[in-house]
Image 1: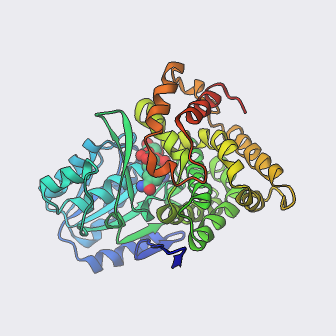
Image 2: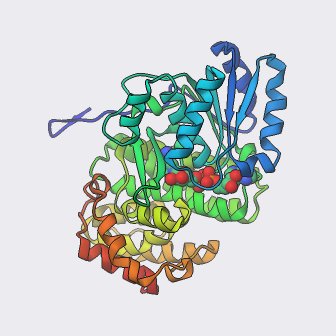
Length: 394
Ligand SMILES: NC(=O)c1ccc[n+]([C@@H]2O[C@H](COP(=O)([O-])OP(=O)(O)OC[C@H]3O[C@@H](n4cnc5c(N)ncnc54)[C@H](O)[C@@H]3O)[C@@H](O)[C@H]2O)c1
């Protein structure tokens, strides 16, 4: 597709399966890949919840050796990724199955892609100096949160211990061969994680909808995610066994993820990175908190889209009064934090007030995301947004 002499690329995994019990289709995928050594990548939380053991048991019918890598607790670092790559090499795995939230999936997809690359090449890629030029070993991803959309994006995000920030690595070769999105796998997702990852998915939809790189195609996905979100997020969080709501949130996460993958996100994510890197605030919690404060500022520069968004969120038709549309959307976002029990201020997260300015310095360096936002925030404006979100100035 070409608009204004720009060429827009659109990607997602070749095979995406969504729906209750879609997990069972993994058996035909395994038969198709004919692996000799399977590696299941997941995290400690899912191991403790018994999910890993259950899946290993289920896959044992194929009589193929299965190793597990679950050395992931909390959001991963580049060191975690290196360990997973080494594990694949040591075990000569030829199929990675990643199961978990964005943390486990990011490790799984990046490790699967990089495991067949030379050491020097991997180092350059992880430093962000180059990107992979080829596919890795086969990879199937199964999300258990709704969600980061990691199973359909080209990004993988890791903490960098050298400078205390989070950083994404991006390549179409990180896309898995197959994404299986089964709401049954999300039923056990704890309420707090469901709330944070649910609003994370919404953040992907709203940010990619207004993104400079948005296209008519990505907007279709983002719009549908926003339409489905309000009726299902509270049910999925407070009545986790509501399969219908969980399934709808799987759609929200998938649709928003495809839009994010192709249109990118913006300032909310840029300002969230230092919170994740320095204070280890979970990605979804940081995005959810910053969302209303950031939109209050940048929303003024994309009023037409704010009218659309108010409409998608079923807040009313403000075609003749775009200012009111922005007010209604921001009010909705603040209420959402309250309703879901998510933190509303940086104070609650024990962020030190003296760190707000250095954090603004760090966030202002995330040019890739800031310049994809309709209005490019400067360092002073970012600092002011951190101050507002520190004190809860609505
Ligand atoms: N690659 C991308 O496009 C992308 C996009 C957004 C976020 N991310 C990354 O994703 C990570 C956050 O992922 P997340 O929000 O999905 O959380 P997560 O993967 O960190 O999981 C949070 C906790 O919930 C537990 N959990 C997850 N699903 C469960 C289930 N069904 N049952 C029981 N426990 C469950 C996990 O064990 C973990 O303890 C961050 O590192 C973020 O940077 C990646």
